[in-house]
Amino acid sequence: MKNPTTLISIQEHDFDIACEYSKIRKYTQSDGAIVTFTGLVRELTKRGNLRYMELEHYPGMTEKSLMKICKKAREIWPIGIINIIHRTGRLTPDEQIVFVGVSSQHRKAAFASTEYIMDFLKTNAPFWKKEVTLEGEFWVESKSSDKQKADEWLSSD
Image 1 (cartoon, rainbow, N blue to C red):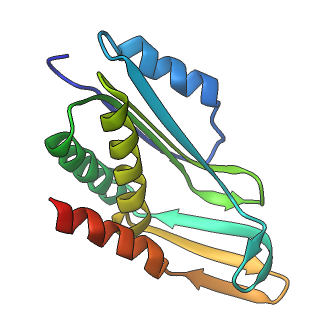
Image 2: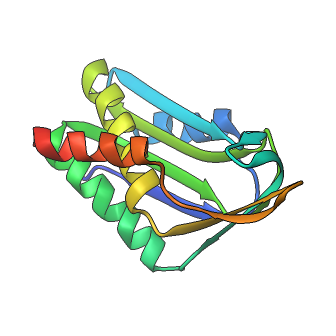
């Protein structure tokens, strides 16, 4: 594919995994692998049972940050389509929060690049998350394990 497609959507409404997979198939011409990841809002947090989560972002800046992550992934692996959706607003436990789908001619590149994109999305993309639990409201920082994984990718470049 001469001009790989990158689809990025920051949205409040839910998404349909089958529909998003179909978008990747629509734009994929000769790729033999599609890997997708869907993240869900977890009920249990470090601070107790989650009632809901509020996600905010800075429009324009967030999309630019995600495009930068995708560009770097394309420099490392031969990948085709990238489809990223991240939800914002008020989300309750078990709701879908993020989708990443990547196509490639080979599965190893599709798996690795999907994981890479998720690791950097969790640590570098400008999203602000507030957890509202029975115990109170708390702003969420990136986990040290997520930062460590991103650092591992950087040291392997």
